[in-house]
Length: 273
Image (cartoon, rainbow, N blue to C red; front, side, top):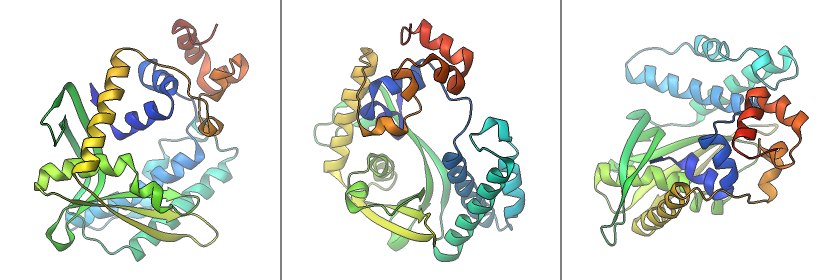
């Protein structure tokens, strides 16, 4: 079993949403506007650094058009083509802000990793379970590798979110073995999207305590998935969950969001009648 930060967070938030997305493969027909704006911004930034690493110049306009060519209007939840074009312009604005104000020299861009999970206190492992992920950027200030995660956010991130971030712990866990260091620096670089967008750094460190917590979290989640313990966990997160109409058993809305094939899978999985 491969676990990523996304899979871990999805199960922790709501086991049934994990079941629907990763086990039944039920996905919305249309990509969300906020998601696409963030992905576009991310693509522009990582493409710039990938080209720079090779000593080449990045044509941001070309990258932008290539990215959005994969998302015609009908495959998104934008209401009009004008809305889509506005999002393209916004994502470029956010990327240019980042490249202007963030001074870093990444050694790795979109670095993929897979490794076993180990309890650093006891030496215990999780047989058949691996942690996998992609780190946006890795730089090396002061001789220590640092994982950098780029985020576009509607409001600034608070200290608690960064301090308890499972995502940053997953990335730091990999760097711990890469550098064999006791304490690993990790950071969010947030592009805060308000009337006057700005950059917000959230610098953190992770060590043995956080890595042991990660091990125990992954252990519980993987065991529950293997035992097919999938249940609803209602909460405030339901308000922005793609699967909201599924829990309401709203057939019309389910078909609109997921299509007839999605509804069929939900019926076959015993989720809706």
